[in-house]
Image 1 (cartoon, rainbow, N blue to C red):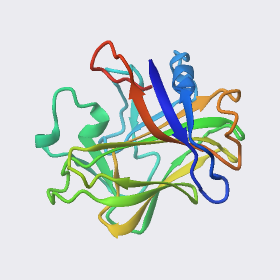
Image 2 (cartoon, rainbow, N blue to C red; image 1 turned 30 degrees about the horizontal axis):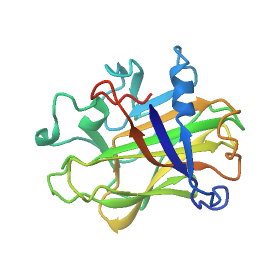
Image 3 (tube, one colour; image 1 turned 45 degrees about the horizontal axis):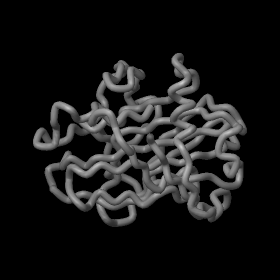
Image 4 (cartoon, rainbow, N blue to C red; image 1 turned 135 degrees about the vertical axis):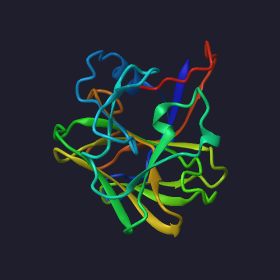
Length: 224
């Protein structure tokens, strides 16, 4: 049984402080229940070219990020950090060496709809410096998470937020805080039913605190 522990954190003005909440991953179950993936946005940040590919584990199409941001550069992670089982999105990164704030814009959303946002990060010594950075991640103007992959180059960090979008687009931004160059491996958006996570509205959202898989049948960890 997979459970998620969600906590809402302060994100001015629309993410207000909430108590810790423990809930089943109803949002993920809802996403799995949509075989046609209507409304899904799945981006492999750093993937070269303009052609999408189908992920072997999730069977979902992932697109390059050229249509979502006009800043930064693509890099492959070091071969030393690429194992056969490593998901494709972690094999490359999009790095933002120039500018203090760099954003992805996800468009064609439904105003007032509830969405799950997921951002994934693995440094993988892509720049050869062996200095994993620390930087901030924002949803629009609101702080989402401080991304810290400084423990080791192969560490993975996943940030999730459930939000109600007030416009027909949403921006996810990486902000350089002086502790290394921001980068990102993957960015995903999933529409959710309005009936789940009633705490979430246009003024406040929920952030993932942790997820644990109790009694997995195998070592595969698929989250669509």
